[in-house]
Length: 312
Ligand SMILES: NC(=O)c1ccc[n+]([C@@H]2O[C@H](COP(=O)([O-])OP(=O)(O)OC[C@H]3O[C@@H](n4cnc5c(N)ncnc54)[C@H](OP(=O)(O)O)[C@@H]3O)[C@@H](O)[C@H]2O)c1
Image 1: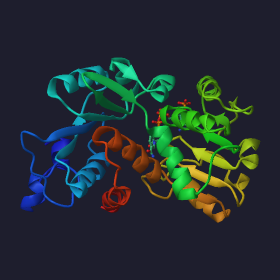
Image 2: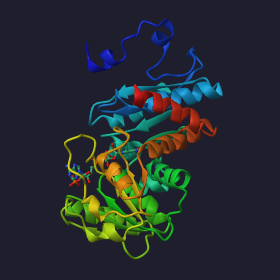
Image 3: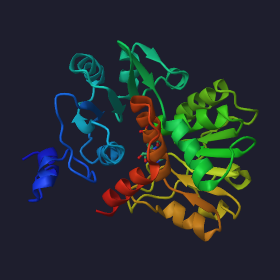
Image 4: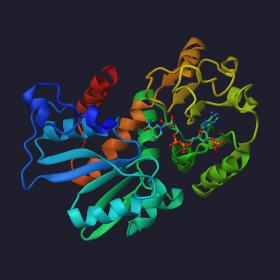
């Protein structure tokens, strides 16, 4: 039995055998009219997206279903072609397909075009539009959960990968200055250039400083973001020296599994406000949900579904 099959093995309860993966609140009964959405990724079987989108569809009584498609690396464009043929209404896109999907779409939103990456595809008539809701998801998390506006903030972002670039562009577009710190200096320079292209005020800079030991930028920052995977495993080093942190800073870690990383523990001990990656996950999904269905996403319902999955 494959991992995917093992993951979907029925629990013995009749209703759960009929459900797509994810714990929707009531039984979904797909018919010939049911609209289909899903996430493509490799790997994808542990994605939280089916749980949160199906919970939202069920809550609003929408005849939609959301599932996960395991699409091997290199076949993101094929998945977009399949979307056309199968009439799939919406796709979420995760690693490693975001760049390939952006190329395969008919049009791109400004954010997806700047990033060269799509985390979502929506239909506009016969055309497929590549969108990127990661940055707006992060901004919404910052605004709603931390209650702050990024304009005028000094931010330091650790990492220069897909998630980091989305956050850098989003912060820069809102008038924050951003310092990028990354293991590979050339990737930091490219990410910082994207921030500048998005309209950052002076202060976009890159650094090849060693990630452990801590750059001085952290001390002067209002907002510190970890957009590296450091912290997903218990044996990971911290991305920087937490002795640099102080109260009145906001420390955001994009990781949501574990929900509380060692960095967030250290930040809380320093008196800083902390944010984990659950908010960004929820709000980027909420943006996709709205684009596909035209309805405001029931965030509380989605959050409860994610909470159940993370606890389970
Ligand atoms: N909350 C959310 O909704 C959300 C969404 C997307 C991603 N994320 C999280 O964000 C993190 C990054 O994801 P991504 O998609 O941006 O990944 P990615 O494109 O692979 O980028 C990873 C980044 O982390 C750096 N990095 C990787 N391993 C490192 C190490 N051992 N030491 C120092 N730096 C290291 C890489 O540096 P180099 O350039 O030197 O390789 C790169 O800048 C992951 O933890 C992911 O789960 C969260």
